[in-house]
Image 1 (cartoon, one colour):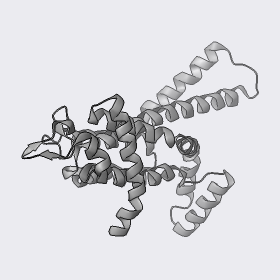
Image 2 (image 1 turned 90 degrees about the horizontal axis):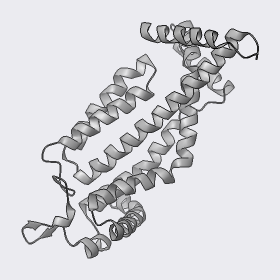
Image 3 (image 1 turned 90 degrees about the vertical axis):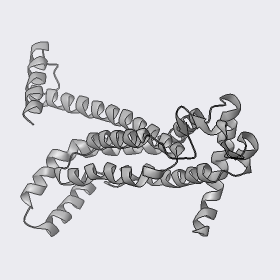
Length: 258
């Protein structure tokens, strides 16, 4: 455990210096955590773009993957081999979407340490968590003490809800749906006693991910529409307005049936 804390120490120091910098301009600790979350996400933007492109390609290839699953449903080994060959052929890495999440984990645990055991970098500016028997008001935000759990569990509910919505937007494989939908509940139980500051970071991250995935879905939908328009035209000539409307109407009916 001590080795893990030593590994996290440089990250914790960077986060604490950044928090103090933000606090000098906006002396509200809860808002500082939200801004820190946005900064972390912006730093990870290059990886997020890679993740977004990978997710878009994966969604685009889902119909073909489903066909493979139907074709080799009775032969798991063949299905695995054909799936990997399919990924290689289409230049898709199914694990690419996990990289930003993995890189966020050290930041998450370092922030946990910042809030649970703030170093002198923080306490020299904000003071100790407790002043005698009274909670230091500088660690208060809305109804929360950012070093303690949410007494009304509102943030836990928000975390589960935003994580569920984010999962719903990113999961298209029916076999993974039940497992992925169970994860928000599992994380909700785990985070029951987490400091409120951690949950603010988590909820903000989830909201960012929802916005990101919304953009991905829009991009994928437009790409599919362009391909269908070209396919139905049989050539690169421009379709008439009436033909485009008819194709869009067919797509909407297909979605309703699903």
